[in-house]
Image (cartoon, rainbow, N blue to C red; front, side, top):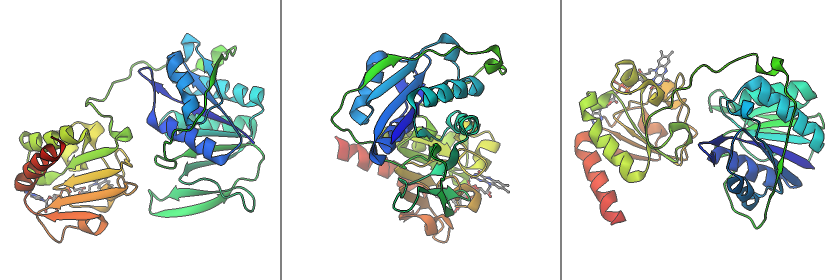
Length: 318
Ligand SMILES: Cc1cc2nc3c(=O)[nH]c(=O)nc-3n(C[C@H](O)[C@H](O)[C@H](O)COP(=O)(O)OP(=O)(O)OC[C@H]3O[C@@H](n4cnc5c(N)ncnc54)[C@H](O)[C@@H]3O)c2cc1C
């Protein structure tokens, strides 16, 4: 079995979700080739060997600097054909998922997105998908010999193995029709840690009473090297930027730890956080629905609890 993995590079670094995709492919067995598009540091690409890649294809064409879906799918289709790969694995993202769907159509492959576990190959090739915003699962058999799999965050653990990867230039002649869309501008979200990639998220709701009180939450987030998030009403009222809005209609997060402060736990909020490994809820109302979804709960006033929690973490880290 031969697997091709698409990795996304952001500011010269391979994204963590892409490392998970490489580890997923390695855990499936067989050979693993990785492909990166646009500018990427050669040493960063060579280092992918330690996650299980044997070869890294680098399509460094400057036209691939921006993530144009049509062009990316043309390059990945060619790579699947040239490498005679059976499976393409990608991490779920606003780029990876549509590119995956296009490649699957072009090569006539079976397709599954939101995959959360390694395939079961004891009878066919069956993947487990997360559906209905994480409230249910489905088992799907991929019958075509060619398969395209989009994995959800945390589908595979990032583990180092002993191995080296050879980096090879990969050139594709792209047609003008591959660039039938143009990205006019991209706005970078603020914050030291990107919310969708964060291992820890500290999120605040209407219980914090106003934007002037966000300092205690930011201090906790800084202490934990966490990203900050918020509930929808908080971003609707302009207390926090829209890109921090977590939930069904906002960002879906899957961190190791999600700390919810002064958030009631409405179903639409939970839809964006229920893939978190551990949920801690701080709320002054013992009957707040969020406690039902929590691994740990603290009933109390956020303005009292949060500074104490931050001080305790700082003391433990000292
Ligand atoms: C179609 C639709 C889509 C939606 N999508 C989303 C979404 O994506 N994300 C989202 O978040 N919401 C979404 N909502 C809104 C959602 O239904 C809730 O209204 C919202 O999540 C509530 O936000 P909140 O918990 O911050 O506020 P509230 O419901 O007002 O809860 C505030 C909480 O803070 C607690 N609190 C108050 N003071 C303190 C204190 N001093 N210390 C500790 N706790 C305190 C209260 O006990 C309460 O539980 C959507 C709604 C609809 C209809």
